[in-house]
Structures are given as C-alpha cells and as structure tokens.
Length: 236
Length: 236
DNA sequence: GCTTCATATTCATCGGATCAATTGGAGCCC
DNA sequence: GGGCTCCAATTGATCCGATGAATATGAAGC
Image 1 (cartoon, rainbow over the protein chains, first blue to last red):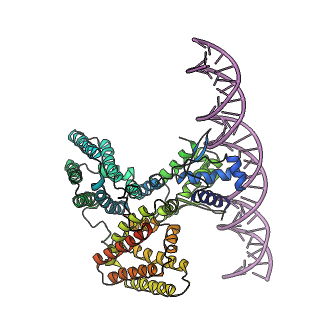
Image 2 (image 1 turned 90 degrees about the vertical axis):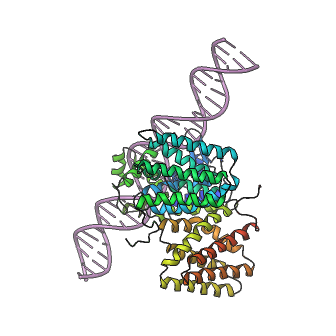
Image 3 (image 1 turned 180 degrees about the horizontal axis):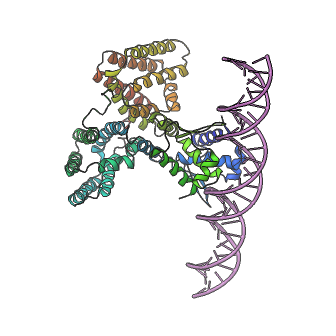
C-alpha cells in the first residue's frame, strides 16, 4: 500500500478510535507530516482525500479540522453518483428513493411537529402560485420540491434514512425531472400528489402517507421511462 | 473557490459531459496540469480527491484512468460512514438496511437463477457446519453472512439498490454484530432466519421472502438495542 | 518465436519556496 | 478604558524542481 493510502488510513483510525473528535483541530501540516513520517506534500494529498469524503475541512490561515461527521454530511457525496448516472441509472435511483421515501413519510406521520406541518402547507401554496404563472419558473419549483421532500425526511426520526433520501436524487436529476414536465398537466399532478401526502400527514395517518408518497415517486419513475417497469423487468 | 476545487469540478464535468469515458486514460499529469492551468502538485491533489471518490484510479508507471463509474464502486465509500457511527448510529443504518433488504429480497425472488439458489444453500450449509464447531470461527461466519446477503442483493435487478445495501453495514459493523452473538442460540436463530429466506426464494414467493428478510434484520436491530424501538421512538 | 533486459514513460514521494487568508496582539485614537 | 487600526506571526494554498519506483515498450539474444 502506498504512503498516501497509509496516511489516509492512519488519520481515519485516529478518528474511529476517538483520538480525533468531531470539530477538533489537527496539528499543523508540518508537524502532522513529521508525525506520520511523510512529506508535507504527501500529507496534503491524504488530507485532500479526506476532505473529498467530508471527513476533514481546512480553513486557510487557521487550520485543519475534523467535521461534524454527521451522516448527512458524510453521505452527501452520493448525489454526484446520481448525477453521473443521469441517463442509465436515474430509474434505479428513483426506485430506491421510492422505497425509502415511502417508509420515511410513514415514520414522519407520527412525529411531525404541527408548526412544520403548517410550513409544509405553505411550501405547497407557494409551489401552486408559481405553477399558476406563465411561463413556469421551473427553478423555483425544483427548490420548493426539494424543500418539501427534505422537510418530510428530516422528521422521520432516522438521520441516516433522511440523509440517504436527501442525496438519492442529485440536484441535476431533480432539475431534469422538473424540466421534463413541460406538460402543465404533469406539474399539476405532482402538486396534487404532494397535497395528498400533506393531508395524510395532517391526519397523522402513516399508512395513507406511505401510499401517497410511494405513488408519487412511482409516478415520477413512470413518467421518466414511459410506464415500463422501472425495476428492470424488461430484458433490454 | 480554490484552484484545486476548480480542477476537481473541471474533471468531473469532463466526465459528466462524456468527454472522459469510463476506462479512458487521462493525459499525463504534466500535460493535464498545463491544460487546466495549475501546477502538477495541485493537479495531483485534485486527482487524489477523485480517487477517494472512486472516480479515478492511478497505476504507477502506466497512467491515470477513469473507473467503471458503476454505482457499486462509487457508493462503496459509504461503508466508512457506517464504521464511524459504530456506536450511535448502528441502529439507524440497520433500519435503512431492513427497509432496503426486504424490498431487494422480494424483488430477487422472481429472478434468482437456479444455480445461485443452490449456491445460497451451500453458503448456509457451510455456515451451519462452522457454527456447529467449538469454538465458533466468527470471522468465517461474518464472511459467509456477507456473501449470503450480497448474493441476494445482486439479483434484485437494481444495481443501485444492491450497492446501497452492500455498503449500508460496513465490515466493522457486521463483524461487531456477529461478535456480539456470544450466545450460540443467537447464532442458531440467525441461521434459521437465513434458511427461512432461502426457502421463500426457492418457492419464488416474494412476499414470504420480504417478510423473512425484514424479520431477520429487525431481529438484529433488536438484539443490538435490547428490543427498544430502533427508530428512535423513545425520547432519550 | 520466446525470453531477457535496457530504456523510456509515468505516477509516487520528497523538500523547499512563495502566496494568501486568518488570527492575535501592539499601538493608537476617541 | 474601550474600541479601532494595523502589523506580524501562523497556517494552509499553490507552485517548482528533483529523485524514486513501477510499468510498458522495444531491442537484443537465444
């Protein structure tokens, strides 16, 4: 194994073992390099790799710090994966998102704070007013859509589940989905489905919430690939 | 944005746009650095970040290549996330794994090749023979357990789903689960649950497969946190 | 035709130099 | 004294050049 890989693993182990805790500052490059027995440039490449994994964070003139290491932070590189497989794999990502979002929405039904239920309704109001204008500002709809799903996921009681859902569809994927809705009817259908999920959450009905959430994502899947089975049942 | 981040994004864009395709060789460091207008060391840090994301791969003496970019490859950094949250978040990861594995097992029921159904049975035979010995070789059980779940996930027909499941429980997490089974009865129960999943798959019964898979992971969850709700229903 | 080996190519690692951002304190003004 | 300004130290960011190590390539020899 190369020197850099060894350095990466050493730092990882220092974190897993608790020697380095979230938010803690690392020794200065020169010292840490010496401690690990590598050159400064080599250490920098190791640090750069950990920065890419959102494990470390540097601030010029200040120092290098361990991040919060929260699942939401560490899992957010996944959205890039979704973006790369924009064409071939979008359906597969959506399928996973459907499974997870259905569960998360059901879980959220029991624990959604009333204040956030109201906020959820406001998001829908704003989305509907945007959709009523012409031409439709798809950028705004994408942002509101993301907020809608993120707010629900954040209340599922499972930070890992929320993080995975959040990153399952990258920004590019989500933008493409909405851009594909040139048909105003598709936009209206999406908003109706969102309303249905909202009503189920208002009623604290987990099963209704689950079904509406699943149907909503499934609708998106089908609109992407022309109602073929998104699971790959076809043998193409 | 720093020079390195710019270089990373530029290479990413070259991949997303298709200018760089999977398996393709990148220009030599010197040329690529010049092309991007950065020093060679700077480019190396950008490349190192993309290596950490499993997007690039270098071979000393040969060159730098774009990886296959398969979801399974790109998502496998996730297992490190699971390892970091070994204590606090293991239950949350397992919950997500339960949701996904139940679905994947159900999906696999219809498309499992007969040959691999037989292999699945052999894995169980070997696991039972290992469990029958004393002292129990937990390392072997962990490996067989991983193979068992991986084989099922690989036949769900969705590469993204399979990859996420595969990485939802890191090696460390899985090892800890089995090490925690000092009680031989717990090992036997796990093997019985695996058998139940196998029988359901043999019968091509998706619903039975789903239920047994979910029950199996749920059992692991409960054994980890003493039958409290793993979703965080308690207000600790 | 095959193996062996020298050589070129390419990434890996190193050490040092300079630039840029942040911090912290000294000094100054009100 | 309190607050502000500015300078110097600290620290990461970027660059440069050199050497080492692994691989590929092609020539030489059998």
